Image (cartoon, rainbow, N blue to C red):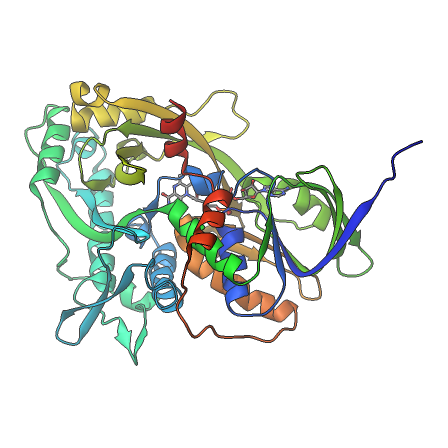
Length: 490
Ligand SMILES: Cc1cc2nc3c(=O)[nH]c(=O)nc-3n(C[C@H](O)[C@H](O)[C@H](O)COP(=O)(O)OP(=O)(O)OC[C@H]3O[C@@H](n4cnc5c(N)ncnc54)[C@H](O)[C@@H]3O)c2cc1C
């Protein structure tokens, strides 16, 4: 006799597909502000195992984008800081350690509050901006290169000063309020109070210049609000909050099919999947949220969403122990001269891992048969730290897929996150360009959800209180960051 083919049928208000930062942050924010029943499905055995676990952990507050032609991505980052402080700091009181700080009497700016258990490390990222006498300009015969570098330098200094220097008071009517696009565009003639040369940085720049046989070039060394973040802790705390609000998680799930009603506007009737225990399940819901990162292709086809996504691969080099204790980013008008060094720290039992993450702006198309070339990263690292120091470290490299949304419209091309839904449909597609945008992505997705389904909003009054049970469950659900997985496997 054939075994019975049984399929379990389950109904929840909202199904979230994908357990990276996007899916987790949306589930968390929605569960915190409603009484909806929410289920998150993840195909891997653990959450946060792809892009959200492999990244460098750079918390972007705009420095990287401050030199671009228009200020859209910069202002998106600045707004992200506002969202973090208004929507997360009061609720994750013990964990979210970014807050407004009184710099001068009655003048407030965002700052990282030192807290070893906090999401953000208080060591800042220094931005190294070259001037006309930098190696890449001296070796160029084009006059336009030196003009270009000065334009970029003025934008960087002006925009950073306008947002984080002495120009904008972020405390307005007891709320955190970021500067406007117009305010950060108004950069001409500003002196940048954020310049902060340190001995370590000067030494690194000097070593770099010498590697090009240049005695010393001039650089602007700027202390930014950017820092490194504990991405797996952020994911774990968001998951713990989800659990405390009754969100259920299923990992190791294979989605077999979407049953679609394509009469009129496309609506998903059910989602058929196979659970980790090889049981077949039919999930019905009021709303389906896709936050599947590199896994969007098949769903977009089925949902007939005509978005263009681009997949590329980037590489990262891990050096253990850390090469220096300073985070820095070297800007340039030439890609080859981009380089960043981040320090990350993790404790595992009695063991403390302090390691460097090195990256540049190199990438390979996803269909390329060759891997990403990591030689430029190693070459830059040799120039900054010297061969001997670099190769005395345990070094590893790995690749990570980057999925970006591409639109014809210029403003969208400078996207920071993509949220797409159709009125009268019952699904939402979400793709953040950066982990750092999770507060904005969660909030904006929430606003969109309100237009798609009816529910009663609730405001949590008390800050989140974790407990051992929640922590244990969250620890089991969320993967360690990728470098930690490498250390443990070696
Ligand atoms: C090399 C590199 C470095 C980066 N560095 C930084 C940085 O320093 N700072 C920063 O802010 N951002 C950084 N980013 C960007 C950041 O990593 C991503 O924007 C962010 O992690 C994307 O989150 P996500 O949730 O959309 O995707 P993911 O983290 O990839 O999550 C998607 C999840 O969906 C799951 N999934 C896929 N298909 C299915 C399916 N069919 N069913 C169920 N589940 C499914 C996947 O398993 C995965 O867990 C970096 C990206 C790259 C590539």
